[in-house]
Image (cartoon, rainbow, N blue to C red):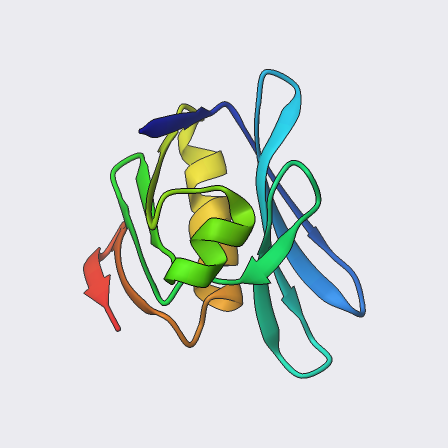
Length: 119
C-alpha cells in the first residue's frame, strides 16, 4: 500500500533533527535523529516510536523505507513502506538532505541533481 504525502517539514534544534511527512493536515510519519547517542527513529501518527529503517530509497518522488519486522509491527506500517511525495522540488531537496543526515547509517539509494548515489 502506497501512502501519499503532501507536506514536508524539517525541524532542527540542539537535541534533534526531525523530518515531518504529512498529508491532509495530519502527520503520516516523523523520522527523527536524536543527537544524544545518534539514535534514528520513526514515529507513527499515534506517537508510537520504533527504530528507523535499515535501508531506504528516494527515487523521483517515491520514498521507500525498509523496516525490520518488530519496527513495522510497532508502527503499523508494512515492512516495505512506500510513500509518494506529492510535493514541489524544493520539498524533495529538503527531505533528501534530512534523510541523508538522519538515516546516515542505513543503506540507501537516492537521486540527486548530480545523479544517483548509493551507500
